[in-house]
Length: 273
Image (cartoon, rainbow, N blue to C red; front, side, top):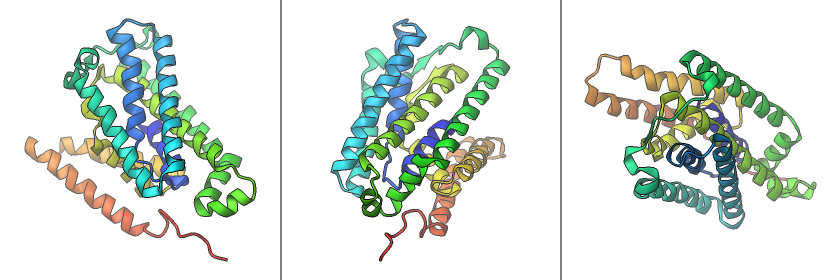
């Protein structure tokens, strides 16, 4: 169910070559705005979803605005800071978010109460999102985004509007996070801030780098493989206190190898004339 989030992040970080590490900022805003409204304040789901949509679009516009006014590395740091600010708000605004306790009893929709029916719904939504991303990737928008990533000055001289293309990319990334975080909490019946820490952002970076930045099918395959490894470690005969360190070391090695292997393609040098 993280696939919409990862594919949205791949559009900005992978295909657009924008040093954006704030994808979890979208996720936090999406999850808590929707499910705090629905569970804590008994607001109808449709209104809560509209609230979440409006807020993630505002965050996307804020990040896009910052990306136009900061250098690449400065924006990367700022996107991390924004993520950590939202996480701090969630942890400390206990009267609304319940802090580290999270929000339990996240409901499923009436027609999808059983695990099988809800899983089928999630699969269908993810398939629709994948088709949408493939359509964008192979269309004019994808070509314009790639051109801006490879040589922004030449692309803009051909009439490609950088601000418009990058703003759309950030909004799509935000919508991917909203999709994942509308589907996942009802599946596990709880929303907890532990799922939105910086390690989750590192996982997204690792998936995109391993699958090939900007490559939709590669990122999809990397998502399945790495999530299988992440959850499969639970079934290895290891002491409980060793599972976390082993997972951290394994993922660190994978990320190091992936970055080393793709060091020339992650952020390519500008073409020279």
